[in-house]
Amino acid sequence: MNKVLIIVTVLAVVLALPLAAYAQNGEALYKAKCAMCHGADGKKAVGHDLSSADVQKGSDADLATIITNGKPPKMPAYKTLKPEDVTGLVAYVRTLKK
Image (tube, rainbow, N blue to C red; front, side, top):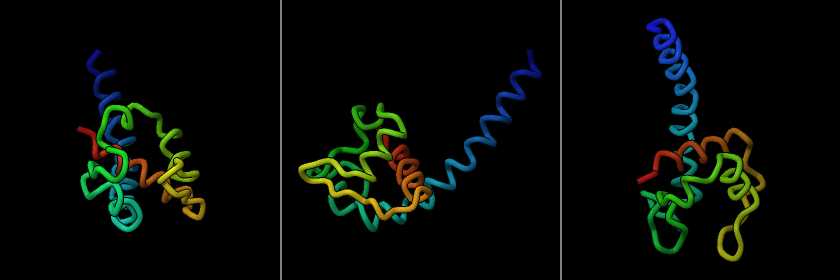
């Protein structure tokens, strides 16, 4: 049983490292493209509250689709972002949860 726990712990740490790196890279992009409407903490009233349970319960794919295609009437599409930029933004949005 101890070996299983160790393996699971190591695996969790290894898998979390890339996500943390994506979130760090996504932070600068978030500040440049998203913070003006969503606020630095994701809670600005003009944009959707990104820290809310409604946003956070969405899948990564759902968030990536919204970032890429926009969400009318107010959120523009960001179709020119590279896939790794979208992944970074999604990872960063995850850090905003309440």
